[in-house]
Amino acid sequence: MKYSKVTGICRWSGGNTQLTRGMSAADDHPLVIERPDLFDDEAPDAELSGPQPVVERAIAEPGKKRTTPGTGPRKAAEKGGTGE
Figure 1 (tube, rainbow, N blue to C red):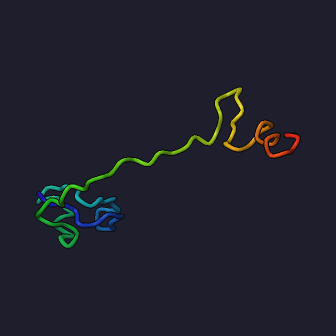
Figure 2 (figure 1 turned 90 degrees about the vertical axis):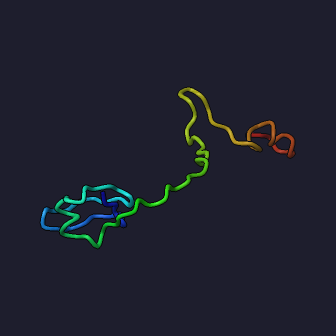
Figure 3 (figure 1 turned 60 degrees about the horizontal axis):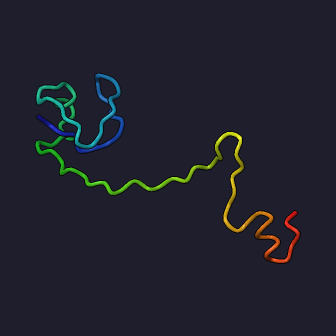
């Protein structure tokens, strides 16, 4: 078994092939035979991934207005404005 050392599109006699680092291929695969420079005998170390970032929703639910802290008539009145 061989493992890809690169991520990207590889051009070879069989066409274009998308490789991802760590992707496995049989030792006798035509791409491995033709382009051994792209493959390694050892599997790469597993990558640790941290927690996924929280993504704020950009839109309100249907029929509801989206508000932001510190805006609106109440805050404007507290600051001495009319809120309009």
